[in-house]
Length: 312
Length: 312
Image (cartoon, rainbow over all chains, first blue to last red):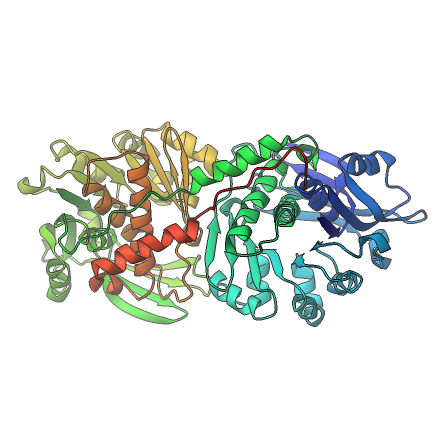
């Protein structure tokens, strides 16, 4: 089985109350693949970098088992750069600088060998590029996509066109509210699913995630962490864990999606424990399984005693 | 078994994007008792109202089975009045007016007959009054308390003194962050539990609730509702459902608290479906049991497939 991840490969400069990191390996495609590769041997990356992208970062991805044939290198260009600052309340962040650089002219080209990818994970990118990618994959079995406020506000028609091709949209709560133009997440979910995606997952950071399908809602908790160093990449690691779990089997039903969300939440919970993708580089399979299983205790509701006609 | 609820009995004037209600029955003691009485026949109220409090509201409480011997009526005084406005995003509200009226001189007097109350539920009030109440109950088996930012900011020493007497503190997330002076809820929970309460429950509105005990964290989902008319009283109905469930048995351990939170969340989910306490006046026991049981499906995590050493 194979996963194709398309997205940014970036330099991130990050400041949090607990430290800072300069020009570390970042980008949605990096986090998706570095999380997914624990579940799937054949994880393929499509993205673009400039001539300034260090060999060491290429080696970080490659030695983690990520297939880099789809990594486009523009020798005369500069790599996408993002700089952000998180506050004491980690739910808020300020973007200090964004340099699109090579991303401005990115034209996703999918290597021939990638055309048979089974699960496609579209990181946050111009919806037109997301569609172009899907057009180059033969018959993907399952398409997961992310987006962000920028595309919701600036290219709504293009975004809707992409959404009609997506099986599972994974966005955060503020994006869901904006996309549906409704503050109630249950209503927003109904409206967004009517745009195309059969499945909607709403990420709520420290409040967990919600899964909306035809027949049910699933509310997943977030793993309770006291020591959060850097939230960067958590959402993409979530998508990587989700895609990774799903590609291991053929079920795409409620239980499979619930398990996928727990593995996504697990990978996200690891990422935030250190700066950049550091924590994703040295996990053991048992670490992942153990933390995922601990979500069951976290969410367990014991059998309930009914309320009787005759109060006690 | 018996529950003693102490708190405000009020007139609430409420505006939401979906309508408005003028001087409806409100107050923490009203919501706590109107929720708890579905679980427990002996629900006792302590609070104060003025001569302007209508017989119809007395009758609403009495006919619901609430024991009103502890309702102090000040014939020459006016009832506590609160006016608030909710926005399209129901997570935000503005207080437009607060008239303390008879609450300014409230001196909680517990009727002799109430001294044997088993579970005491202290609604948001001056922490000194909360302590005075506890001093008048013989040997309460379990004490649940609420508080708010006003007391955290203005009477921190008095609040800490009360907290040392409380078994279970039930507050919302912004109050927890302020009380502990820490934005991380897991850290905040540790710090708050060190102030006295063995158990801390953090209410997060549409994001559910968190339970912190010595040995575990429990994350409860919120019931997904599309049609929220008026959030007033949801937190107090939560406390009432929690107290109501607990008083039915003698266990105060993790499973009992988890069940209590689900019943609390259930009562809160009903309250918001209509203005004021309306929805609490006409529930059937099966309505409550059915919705509580639906939380299990909402939160169910299927058995997980471990991550293997050899990725798929």
